[in-house]
Each structure stands twice: as structure tokens, then as C-alpha cells.
Length: 123
Image (cartoon, rainbow, N blue to C red; front, side):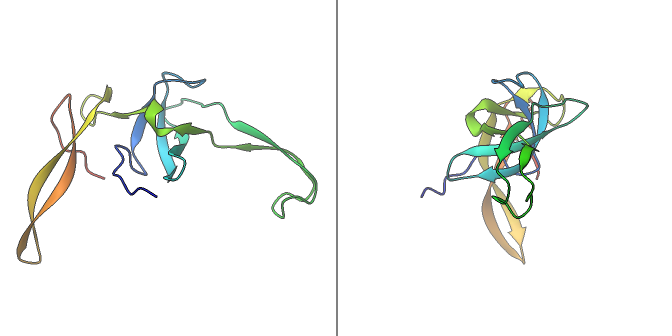
């Protein structure tokens, strides 16, 4: 298992660059690091195509009568771009080291920043 840093975190506003929901803005709900897939939900009135899953009766305790269940869509992390905090347009992400004082001691931490506006992206 790899523990590499991702350019997207939970709660970020993203732009969908490919797929059925191409060109729409969404919010990241959860990230599966093993498969590099992200669960997203539409924002600003953008509705995303839901995933429809057919469930057999008694197959799931949450849905014992069976039928068709709609879920939030998942998309590969490479098909998403973070939205710039100032302009709201898709942007690439960079990382830089920044000195921060924590409990009286100076430490360096990695901070994400927008390549378009050079502004730090806070969580």
C-alpha cells in the first residue's frame, strides 16, 4: 500500500474533466486510497449522474426488499481538478514547504497552493 499525498482532499470543491458529468462542479465526499476513486456530490445546482445498482432481495440488510438503489457517483481521482479559491476556475496544484510555529517550536509543513493564483489552499 502506498501512502502518497493526493492533490485532492475530502471537502474540496472540484471540477469534473471527463466522463458523463464532464464540465460540472462537485464536492468531494470521500476518497478510497486503495482504488484511487473519489465519491462526489454536485454543487451550485449541478446534478451528477447517479450510479444505479440492482440489489437482490435479502442481499443487503439495509434494503431487504431488493430493487434499484441510487448512489453518489465515484470517479477516478485523475479526472478531477481542484477549483481555484479566488476565481473558481479549475487549476493545477503545487506543494511548497512553509515554516509554522507549533507550541513554541518552528516546524516546516507541506502546504498546497493554486498554480493560477499562487494562493494557499486551506482545508
